[in-house]
Image (cartoon, rainbow, N blue to C red):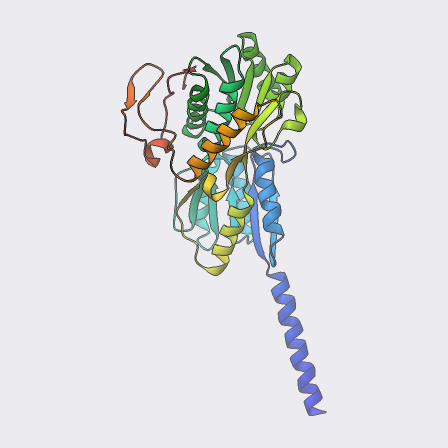
Length: 353
């Protein structure tokens, strides 16, 4: 009887331990600036969250459509108070709110997307989307007839300016006489505003449209007008099947899983992570059949060269839109210069303000 009692007690302790372990799943939170259902920026991040949710012993949650500023701080603070182990904040304007909350919760790990600040328990991350932008620019340059390409963009911050510049350099590789006209919306997500901006570019003769926006409104505007479009964040072909040529896309899943693994193992470091084509965090979607085979082959060859490190996109000779020489032959921009880019390359029509 004594042995039986000991066994029963042991089983009770084991069961209690298992129950406690089950209640102590590693909790990962995500904060999004726009709705997750629009195939845009937040949708792409949420695909990464879904990949994390499949990991054993991990639970995830998210809050969508969170405005930058005080609302973001409130949401991030709420997650930290609930005991989340790792919190991803996925918009540039979340940087300072994330840092503020991180200082209050030193045992929680925070990762901020597209910013530059770090702390002992806060890192930042992004992808070299400019690499994929260059490739989609090549497609646009090959397909334009009017030599006017429209670019609907959110805010004039380095991330967006860098993408516009890379796209333009890709355009010029295929069509040196083409220009890229930029219209700012000053919003990440506002389908109506995005569509009106797209229409304004169509009015000046653009026959290819692209975007740095969260909704497919620009794609829809292109299809309605009977011109071509190039998507962003995800393959947007289903929204404009006749117009869509290609898209610059995100694949966050492998990166998010890597970060969760590092934090759980205790190997995570509070640094800046900036991966590109080689790591698979950015890429392009399949090209439409309307893109000639010769163009597709050239784009894919350049894609391989960028991935292998054989081609640097921002290399000299390179001039800005005012004609000032920024790089001479043999020179290339450093990562620090890329992260702080505030000027347009030659071929862009528009202001950086």
